[in-house]
Length: 228
Image 1: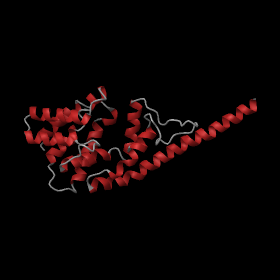
Image 2: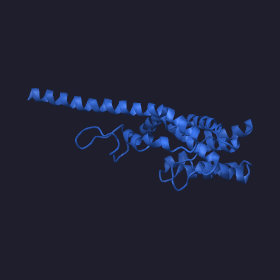
Image 3: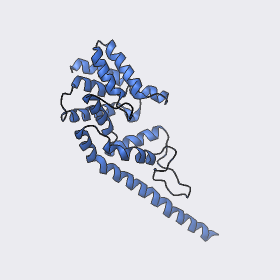
Image 4: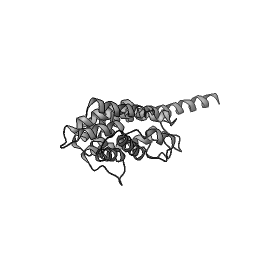
């Protein structure tokens, strides 16, 4: 990967980034995670890997405008077209597109190449630990979604029974289950090091808001009864 090639790919990536939770810093973290993971793998084509990391979220803008679109599919198509127009070989363009196309959680389309598996793991690492919590909260804020919902009895839902979107639901249905979905041993080991941080944050947040509701409602009822 020459500096000129890198700059060309980076410029195209930067022109496509608008989502605050999937901004250019997310791209760089994924790239650096991928390079760390790649050290433990064999026969990695670093040009393919670096290009795929830089371009893996270039379809986000289209998905944000039309939620029915898949940013991985759109991004793969855009990357293939861009690389071809810039004079990259057909095999290279397709290899990069495959990495991008398969970097989401989809059973029907798992990553097949070592570069695709590394990108998958590197991207998922950025949803683990403290950074995963921070990015999820940023995204939920962008979408005007709540931290939590109330259950019919008025208590705080832990997220496991939420029908609508919330941070607690995202944690229970996605973030909590991330840690056994890695393809590489290095990626899984890096994720496991972050697991407790995310769990502790969720547990503390749930405990704080739930305690406040329970005790606060009891105090409110007591005060109203005293005024009756």
